[in-house]
Every structure is written in structure tokens, then in C-alpha cells.
Length: 462
Image (cartoon, rainbow, N blue to C red; front, side, top):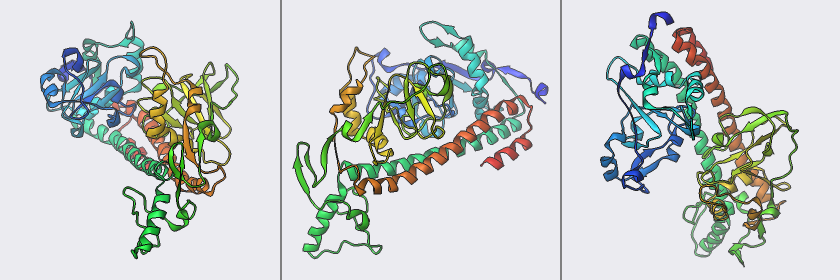
């Protein structure tokens, strides 16, 4: 079958292969909102576009940068740096859009070619490896437009292209569905954290509830929970409300729940706790490129001989301390190691872990909070482009919390831990689906595996 298909150079099936432009190089600026501007770091390992990393330009800038305008069904390929060889297919939801000079825009000729099939061909791990190994190693690895045009892809009949793309797409669609569900679950956990430990909504609700009673207003719902009287607060279960104080008191940080205290961060969390790994042994390694900016855990990691780096174990939170990784939100909660296993990673990580009975996920949600990130960014020192947060500077961060053995923390753990267990389950399924996709992809594209046989694998997995 494979020999019947043959191969064709990419440039022979393309209407255009070009690249974008950075606005500032032609006298324009980025905006806070407007037209999407998709950079190399927006392209994910899953062949998607990470909307959280998209920048923006004005409609006027978009019109002025006609060469870098992106259309639906364009294929984007990162041309340089650590993102070299990453590929994504542009969907309608991301257009109109532009890109910069580090991203190739591959636009196929209309008719007879499945855009999704070609994108999968270009996403083959073996192709990305050959690109990385074969490009010029100057200041940073890069590939030019001519070399991209000379890449070859198999060209089966259109119905076979569509069938292969449909099979692989079913796996990617399920991975994307899991990602969105996990994003929602984490958003719920972050909302609970903010409500309880930043905005102190339960205390405000109890105070306003008492005020409502004195005014003869009824605030209980049919399920005995209390409708939030404080704008933006979560619906409060009476059993949880009873754990919180009924009033505020003054502190150096302003009003705080009565009986709670202002703590220095080291009173609540360990900073870079000791972890032991023997140099030269193999251990799970998480590099900075795989650190998540939104979700709580990486999509992959590798085994690597232990060298100089930060050590961590399950329940630890990792925070990137160097620019621009900190500003981009690179933060992880470690729950992907085996029991008792120790992993390691960049020296540019800071490790946080709650003390005593405080739920370990508390540190992660704190590290994701705007208040913590703003403080950490303000502590950065060093020359432009290489600024980093000294770990000991975090000792100056102050937060408000009850005693470590407070039932508030216990209840908080019971509320959020199941959410992260579901997230972890979804991520494990997605990793398995991605592994299956990466196994099927080269076999389907080469013709080694027939579509009906591949369908059986996919049906069993999803």
C-alpha cells in the first residue's frame, strides 16, 4: 500500500510557504486586545494552539502586516529555538490572526488535499527529530522556508487522507476535551482558594447573613445552603460556614478574620526542602519547556542522569523563577511520580511544600494566585533578560491563614483534592491517548497499518 501512495514535496502542494513579521520591526506595537498574534510558544506538543499564550495587535496593525496574516486551515511550523519543528493547524476560532518571523505559514492549494492529514504528516516525531538534528546550529537551531518546502509527505487518495486524519483526530479531540474539563476543574479549585484565603468570603457572608437576620430577610436556600450576599462569593454550605470566624480584626495587612494570623511564607511553606538523589543515576527529569503555564502538571517528562538541579517529589509545587517563564505562569504540582520516587529539573525552579497537616495542593494554588505571582515578579534581580527570583526573597511574602491544624485546612483539602484527582485521571488518559496517537501516526501515514485496524485501537481507547 505504501509504495502505491508515493511521496511529494511540500512546496508542490502549497499555494504559499511564507513567514510572519514582528510588529515592532516595522513600527507597530502590541495591544492589550484585538487581533490574535500567534507566536512559536503558542504551538503545543499536541498540535494545537494554546490560547492563553496568544498576544494581540490592533486591526490597523493586522491590515498593515498582510504577509503575516493567517487563515483557517493554514499549517504553522515553528522555525527556530526550543520550539523548532512544532506544528499546529489553524482553526476558525483563532482567525483572524498574524504571526511572527519565527513561524512558517504553510497554505495548501485548494482541493484534493486534506489539511489535517498534511498537518499530521508534519507532526511525526521522527520528522521533528530529523529537522532538529539536520538544521544549522548557529546562535540557535533554525530551519528556512526553502528546506520546509523540500520536506516530503505521502500522498494517498483523498478518502484515505481523510480517514487517517479522522482516526488521529478522534484521539486529539478527546485529549482536547480532557484539557478543557481539567481547566474547568482547576478553575473551581482556584475559585475556592481565592474565596476562602484571599477574599475571606465565608466571613463576609456570615457577617452579612447576621445583618440580614436582624433586618428580617430570609437568606437560606431550600438545600439549607446560604445564597451569597457578598458579590462574587461562592454559595456557602452552613457546615463549612461554621468553621470560619464571624468577624474581622485589624492587622498590618488590613482586616483579617478574627483569630487568623499574618504569617511569613516560611511559617506555612517549606522553600526548597531537601530531597536526595545520587548524581549519575537515572531519574525523572522535567525541563523548563515542559513546565505548564495553565494546567497543574506537564504532559510529559523524561528519564535522565542526575546532574545539577532542583529535586522534588509528589506533593511539591514547582515555580519557575526566571524571566519570562515566571511571568508566563510556568508552575507545576507534582503528582506524576511513582510512590517514593524523587525527580529533578532545572536550577531555575523553586520548590514549595506546605508544613504539617496543611494540604499540599494549598502551595500550588497559592503559587497560581495573582498576589503571589505579582510579589515574586517584584523580587526579580539581575540583568535584563536574565532576571530571576532569589529563593530567600520569598521569605518576605506574607499571607493570612488560620493555624496549620485548623479544620478549615482539613475541609479545604476535602473540597479540592478530589478535583485534582479527577484532573490527574484525565491527564493520565490523555497521555495514554497521545502515546497511542504517536504510535498509530507513522504506521497509518506509511500505509503499514490499515484504517479499519486502527479504528479498533481508537474505539477501545476512547
